[in-house]
Image (cartoon, rainbow, N blue to C red; front, side):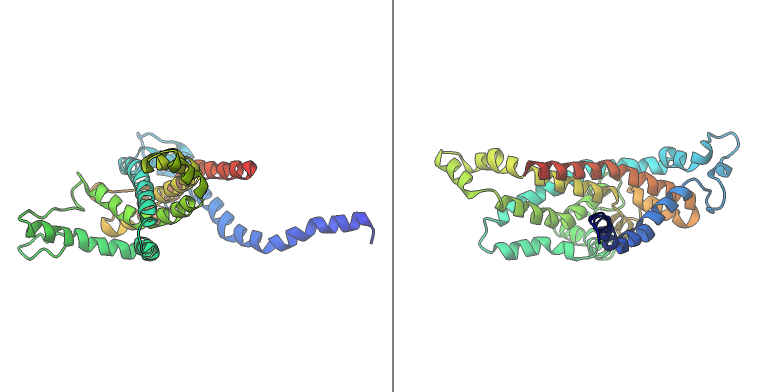
Length: 304
């Protein structure tokens, strides 16, 4: 067998090994993705163009009518605002809490046990976690005894029970606390590994030169682990954009707590086209974050 023939065959060998994975990706990822995009231009039955949904005398975007709904409907605008609020508060709250746990857990005697306890919520299904926190936030509206943990404590100290989940003034914040409780262990695990990778010689040299522990952390450790913090942050951004379980179990999106994914779920049976348009919108929101992550990985590989 001559050399050109061998070279041609060697080019095809990697593709033969990749073929099963590419086939699975095409069937379970690419086809659903393109089908979702196609259905986003159809009506609620998925059989006609979305233009037939246009009401006489009302604004209409033709085949893009479902996207007009996704960008202008009051309930969708509320969902977008709530997702933005989650991004602004829960993402930094979770990352900062995880970093705090990572720093403190490294200084306690039973480090492994402390980290296992903090990470434990991640082992619980999000639906199960939602049910747990329903009992924490539960309010007895009748004359019976308060069995919700928070309200039982309030009543025991002479206070009045609070409707944590139905009061629009703070119910979104109550849901975010659940999210922080679930994801802080994940952030702690990744950031703790990054902290342990900081060379001990650099830290010791800084302490010998008279640097305080706060200065060592903010001026040496934090800059070194910043790439890891960025990766954890972008991962949390994606998780928050697709947040669903917590909202669905605790409030069902009622009382001003609607989010994008929950809105999509509500419409998936009654209006296929609008639901698929919301799904496409959700994918478009996550793409910039994915691109940022890929670029970060490439920069890290190039710097090695």
